[in-house]
Length: 119
Length: 107
Image (cartoon, rainbow over all chains, first blue to last red; front, side, top):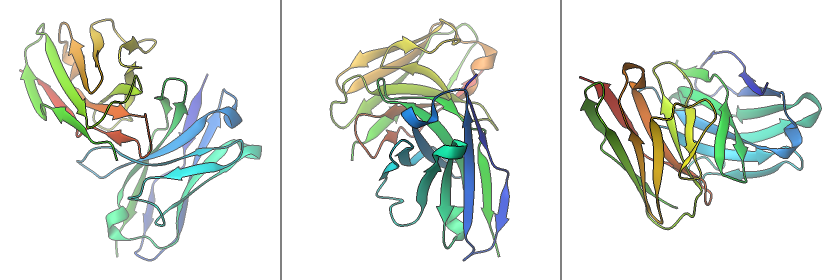
């Protein structure tokens, strides 16, 4: 069974660093892209970027380029999303999702990680 | 970037009604187009991929169609459990982009 299990909710202060995770199981981690999607409370979905764990090829949305870092550790089948200096505007739910490139579908999603940034 | 324009932004319909949501892309995207359903407090769920393919386990009352730049999601007979927000997505080129969402309510 394919599963993406994300790390738990976080409460941080502006300027803090943070790394959240997405643990994949039930499929060959190296051969599917993993995407990150942001959802500000009450708003829509925003694609942030995607990584191919096999070679760590990473693509970012221009809206998030330079603001976050996406990475992956093949040895523990885990993808990461990290910030070096959080802002209040980063408060959102962050989802990871598996991308099947043949059809361009996000077929499995993590449960989401709520990140709250407040002073 | 490819823009996805989804309409309507909200929709109220009765149980048993036929409901259609549309999505227009700013350029052709082949069949790299999918629909997602998001219920409150949960992650999005894939309904339709490659324009018209029903994801495994999704009820057959959901149907996707269209081509080129114009796409549709149709629910043939609305059920109470279909209350959700629906999003379209283009994955033809990065940055991938979602539509703004359609909030579906049952009268």
